[in-house]
Length: 244
Ligand code: ADE
Image 1 (cartoon, rainbow, N blue to C red):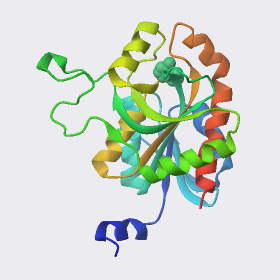
Image 2: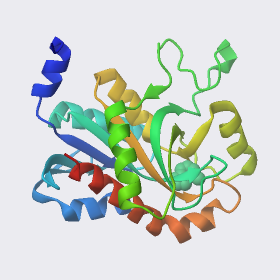
Image 3: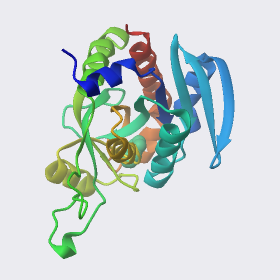
């Protein structure tokens, strides 16, 4: 027998909120949408319509955790999204990861949350029960299945996304994020969406393609490989929507 919560979830209409920080991360998805309507709220344009036969709202949040948190709450309050996906590029941290590869979030945390002065561990949010936000298992499963189908020539990893209001382009910082937080990739928004999703009990997933390796060459690599990485991640997002 279905629990009440499960039944409510199943009865709820599926509306997928898809957020990218930058225009180039969402423009191909917006172009793919049909029956779309535009609404501008808090300076962000929300595209509500159909994407690969699914009801979806696609939006460019802007860069950083504050933009992402505001955007996520609007998607929840005003568009009643049932699922959240954050898509885009990231700096690779995990040792075997290459530019163009994909990270599917197992969970996400804010690497720049620092209340160590009060005795908290780095990354721990004071006075909250949870600081590491777990992605939805069903969404992870679907993304893993789809990733190798739509991107057969790259590696797809499932691991921790670490977010902060910093572009990481320094080897020492990169190794700190690996050793301290076990991050697979670093970016600037995912954990903010994850926290907002957690607070509102909405299932979420972060999917990121690697544009650089978060080291001294990160800026040059980012400029060179961003477009290719975005192609990979767009294929994955559309593949996820095509499932079922
Ligand atoms: N997004 C893409 N590359 C990144 C990096 N190295 N640091 C933070 N965000 C990123």
